[in-house]
Amino acid sequence: MLIRGWDRGAEQEWRRWLAAGRDFGTLAANGPDGPVLTPAPFLLDAEAGEVLLHLAAANPLLAAVRADPHVTLAVTDDHAFVPGRWRGAPYTPTSYYASVQFSCTAELVEDPAEKAALLNRQLAHFQPEEPGQPADRVEPRNAYWEQLTAVRGLRLTVRRVRAKFKYDDKKPVELQGEVAERLAERHAATGRPQDAAARAQLLRRMALRTGPADRSSD
Image (cartoon, rainbow, N blue to C red; front, side, top):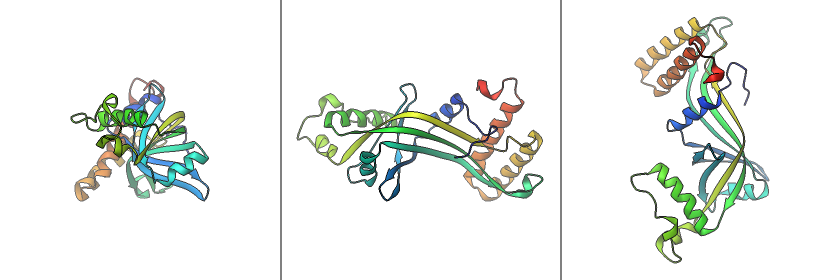
């Protein structure tokens, strides 16, 4: 992912962006026949520098991880196509989007009790009103234990985070404001939710440029 100086996202910026409910991404590993990708929900523990998730035991990505534990988890959202006529000279079209990529080292979690603990942490995040059975109550041969044989846990140790918020920060603020108006108009005409989400990010980035604090303090 190419990141220009004006597109780079600060740590607190991408953390807040993910914490706003963005917990589903695409995990990529290096398979013997090329990249293997799978969509998956995940739990980020930013303080511990790790990501937790699980996959079906038959998922081909697991074989790739066994051969090469280096993986990438990508989350992309708030995207919209921007016609060139909106952007001023040289009138080249572009796409707005936000994306965070985690370069990680993956560790397979196969012990039943450890898998149960990992799943319980995920369930506490995704369905706090109905969390899973506590790991210390899981016993061999009960229904919950049997289900564990069908999945494998993955613990990803984060080695590097790259964040990009591509919303024309290289352009004058006045032009960004005009694009924000056009996105609002298109959203009103078509109802496309992407336009509203991209506009919100555009306005937020504009505020960072024109506010009293610079982006590095975000």
